[in-house]
Length: 284
Ligand SMILES: NC(=O)c1ccc[n+]([C@@H]2O[C@H](COP(=O)([O-])OP(=O)(O)OC[C@H]3O[C@@H](n4cnc5c(N)ncnc54)[C@H](O)[C@@H]3O)[C@@H](O)[C@H]2O)c1
Image 1 (tube, rainbow, N blue to C red):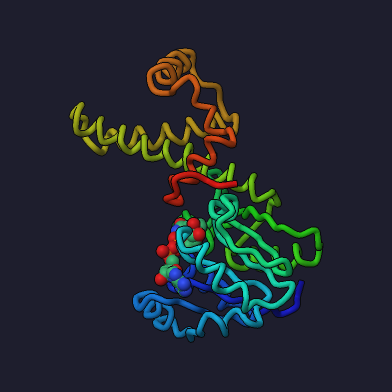
Image 2 (cartoon, rainbow, N blue to C red; image 1 turned 180 degrees about the vertical axis):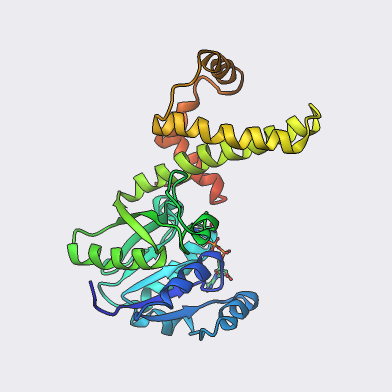
């Protein structure tokens, strides 16, 4: 799609707001930036970008990107929707609030969610910039996930254009439902993958501080084995040794609860989301 779009970024001075704006500014799209905190405003104007009042920023937008904190999405969606044009897309960058039903709705405005996959650990990287870009959106190619509540193919294409720009460079955009996106993030990637990352760091600290192993030795063997563990498990590179399989069983019995897969149920997803969104429970 070569058409120039009008895009509004609300929360343009935040972490994601700055990231998506840094990519949007490289395009010919017409972009408006809104930010309400003095520190955020300072970050936006320091890049040479001009701030626009939120009402004016969203008025002509084909896509309004809400890069505000998840806890503010309910109030901000309510505030911007009346000023958006018919057929435009309200895009959030995380599925939690959308799946929990916290976003305001307008019948003639399409709700959509997207999230970056981040560059794969198995990505073939060639340049120092690609190696340095672990988050994605700068130099290392990544995929993105998106959900749109519309059957209109043209709207989906329009959204894909925006997703490919804001998270560039993007290889594939994978389309799922809002609920599936919420099952992927938080359950699959934050609850599991990020938790295991934090557990690895805690284990490293134990090896250094409790067992008294020299930090360089512990760090080196952990980082190498983390790659082997992931390559063997997720890419099928090599089989684990027989002794390793026994140690893995011991680890699972000692650390993992038997009923851990309950986190994939709808009920547990709602509990997780309620905690993240500081709610007593998700009302459906
Ligand atoms: N930080 C990440 O790594 C990351 C990754 C993927 C998705 N996300 C999602 O992106 C969204 C933004 O998260 P973040 O981490 O960038 O948040 P952030 O706190 O870094 O930035 C939010 C910005 O929004 C501004 N803001 C708040 N209310 C506003 C309003 N009414 N009008 C204009 N500006 C307003 C704040 O001043 C702040 O600058 C969230 O939905 C989050 O889940 C974040």
